[in-house]
Length: 121
Image (tube, rainbow, N blue to C red; front, side, top):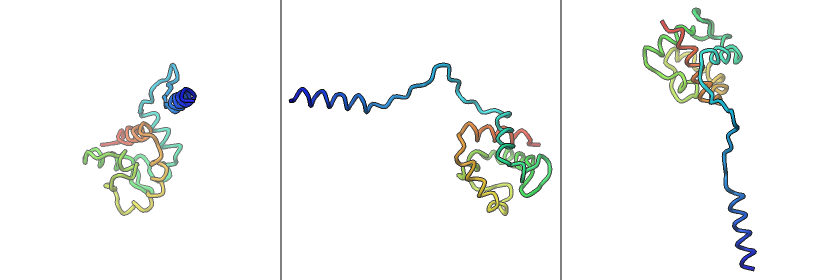
């Protein structure tokens, strides 16, 4: 009886062991300008943010310039972990869109940041 219990316990321990199996030939995700541009388009950020003109929200150029000057993190803002620094009066309008960006991966958010900051003057 003790042997059956020991075997059962061993089987349970082995079956509960969590292993992460990485697929062979997997390529790590890398943040990029191109990916950021695609995300910006696909998530309809362009509806409120144009390259050089204020529409509903500030222009991409204005956002990039201020974030670079302040050495602030767009990623933290897009995760809703930082206060708005460009135009706080528009924050309530932007809040709904943060629900989209909060669930993005860090690589996706970094890609958006790379894309946006490329417009800095």
